[in-house]
Length: 95
Length: 490
Image 1 (spheres, rainbow over the protein chains, first blue to last red):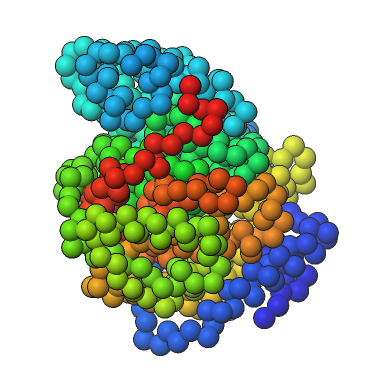
Image 2: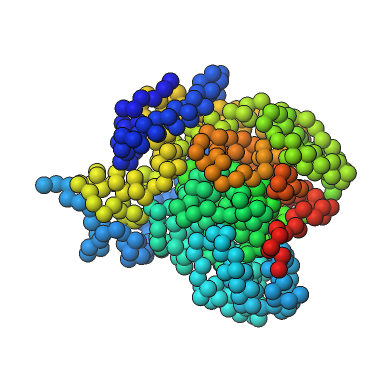
């Protein structure tokens, strides 16, 4: 099943990655090559096979839901592209 | 043994030289820092800070003087730039994280520092560990010390080149689909990934969480065993960490191979395997027979589906993990944008290189409405088929052996323009990664253009000690792992 140019643009939008017309056209060829390779999986009979989400099974380990200080607020904020008064700044979203 | 000759030695030798006060940790650190400087053209390191290294070395010397030091105290190590560190920038070789300073150290980094190992700096790799040649680094290619026109392999290319060039005696690395074994093979060194869940993923910048696993690159299996003793173990901060008692990974280093059954998957010796690689592998297997092992043919019928399975699961998990890079809390933010959405789109377009963008697109698609069952769920089912085949195989053999790669290291640019041909580089390493079993590469000769060949060994879950014992016995009988590339032996 081959993708179209508008599929690539829709996926890029969902992934929040800006893509030009020329980049989308280039990506279309590459993605279709990759999907042609992946397509082989469709012919494998997997009836009754449990999907494997973790190599060792057993699911996620749980712990008590206990609050603990991280003590890294300032260090974490130091990496922010824009910050003020201990908050991350983003472009205005409500007019 | 002079201080300048020491950087050629193994971790075990360096540990002994430090413990017997033949050399101080500071002298050793200085010797390595000067080698790193001398071989800067390799582009193996992304961040070196001599003041950090020397401060850690002084601490190690104090521990040794107090008699409070284990076998690794004062031995230098370098870290793949996928592990976050407080003292060095943590970039994942991406523009997205240029200059990022982590508030904490990754567990693996913390544990090795706790054992007294001295950090030499951060190592180049493929961006977000995505690649098989290190050509995807935002900060430039790493050269293969054996042949500077060849790639060192990837994604842990800086780690492999650093150990091969003896500018670090050991380097941390990570493996998602072969990112330890493939560069170890291409660069002629020893590299091992443990069972999934053995090494903490806390502080390892995530690519594909159900596959990512930290491991180590060294000159020898013995060195890897020594470092595993300090590096692996349960970590409550990683929800996929396996809670098992600590082990001594050196305990099988003296093992006898008499009667050991080595399984050879016939699918690993078929079409595509280059004759020069096959010749070196067959000779290594001959050596194992001389050492008392027997060879058993096995089959992993679905191993060939490993690549398609991997290129569904890894991009799916990558698209999810990399969604955190949105230009808000950390990482690159575009200079000009219209609104919040546009800021995120432009920041991600500029911050990510072509390979992460490609994988995010694949992953977003296979997880999108209407395609999840057909692609992602189907891939997870075939993943189980492959994992089950390994369990069948381990009823007939004790370890599995074969090539790591179909060919020796390729040249720069040879595969860069064609993602699918690059993806095929991991044909023999991906099945073990999907199963989550331990696997390693050890040097076993040279192929075309005198480039190194790696022998792959795999064992069942939690059998790292046996795997290292089997590798060590071979390294006692051969000297491939002691070869040093021309121009790096002094």
